[in-house]
Image (cartoon, rainbow, N blue to C red; front, side, top):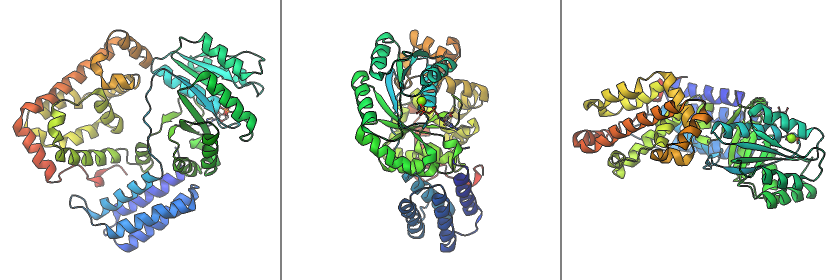
Amino acid sequence: MVLDSLAKSLRDALRRINKSALVDDRLVDEIVKEMQRALLMADVDVALTLDITNSVEKRAKEEPVPKNSNPRNHLIRIIYEELLRILGKPREFHVKPATLMLVGLYGQGKTTSAGKLAKFYAKHGYKVVLIAADTQRLGAYEQLEQVAGSVGASFFGIYGEKDSRRVVKEGLEKFRDWDVKIIDTSGRNAIDSSLTKEIADINDIAKPDEVVLILDASIGQAAGKQAKAFNEAVKITGVYITKLDGTAKGGGALSAVASTGAPILFIGTGEHMEDMEYFNPARFLSRLLGMGDFETLMAAAKEFQKELDENAVEKMAQGKFTLKEMYDVWDQMSKPGLFKKLFDSMPMAAGGMKKEMDEQFLDESEGKLRKYKVIMDSMTYYEMENPEEIKGQRVERIARGSGYNTSDVKELLRDYKRVKDMVKNLKGNRKILSMMKKQFKNGNVPEDLSNLPQ
Ligand SMILES: Nc1nc2c(ncn2[C@@H]2O[C@H](COP(=O)(O)OP(=O)(O)OP(=O)(O)O)[C@@H](O)[C@H]2O)c(=O)[nH]1
Ligand SMILES: [Mg+2]
């Protein structure tokens, strides 16, 4: 588990809030003190820690509790929102054909992460080549070749060649038709002029879509300084923080990098090739706090409130329901039961819709949902947004990437269409629409945190 002890302290604090009969200043003070201790132990910067915890204290003592919440949930929400601030903003990342250059100092995890990224892209059905541009370290060629073999990616290197520029030029030329090219560059002990020059040259030759800085989480706060220095030397487009599984200082690394404004794109959570995750601050925090569905419920509550204002219940009924919406719901609600819970909390039972939903969709076996998620993971952003374009070759590529058959992909598309039609049918049902609106207006949105798994 990532950031074990920070997670444990924060979870204990939330549990305590949930159990307390009364939210008073004394409880807030104790919780704030516990948060301070936990964040500092995780190597989060002192000033940042104080900023966050002071803000929690002030808001908890001064902000009125919204009428659709209660003091306990309100305090938890404040803690969640303040902690989220230290993780930075997510960067949209689209899985599509691309050239990636990985940079970083010695031993940060560049070569391992190159393999993980190759596997990630291959899972999406793309043809990937790993290019060995680390011409400095002995054995770098063999290591990358071995990694490429283990993830089923192609490999290019020139054995014994010292000029990384030549390797990159020839590699890109030879593997021109490959979808994804990942360049593993050489490290140094520190950022020096030879490293910046080498990276700048490779950058000119390869014109990569992404320049990803690889940083070892165990350096804690120092990751922020490194991110800044690299960003000044070469423009980085994202950061990959490795070894979050094996350090107590991960909180420091994440928060320090986020505070430089460099987006954290991925995290490495183990030595195996599948131990990598796309980094989404809100999702990461919900999981850390042991509330897989916390963010979703919050987001849903907020979203519905907003939609109400914009009259978007009708908008949704008019059709913005792509695979992306469907995926987000599934992805965030790891348990299908929660999906059902959300729908149950809507007053749809009145129409035949809920029954139909149950039959068609919600009560499907977990296996099917899991299968659909894997298939959707193999789709590109464009495909998720435009499901009607998924046919022919695309179906085949997605099937190949996910390890399922084309018939499974088609089945998913059929089910998606059914749900979409159901949502669309809402449009015609004025009675249900007006009931939904009234319900939302009453603030009757799912925000009951007391039932969440502890
Ligand atoms: N636990 C854990 N170990 C990791 C992770 N990422 C990389 N490692 C390990 O870190 C060590 C160094 O990784 P490399 O990928 O060789 O690092 P590098 O940056 O390519 O190193 P140089 O080529 O020497 O500059 C290896 O033992 C990896 O197994 C991770 O996310 N978790
Ligand atoms: Mg390496």
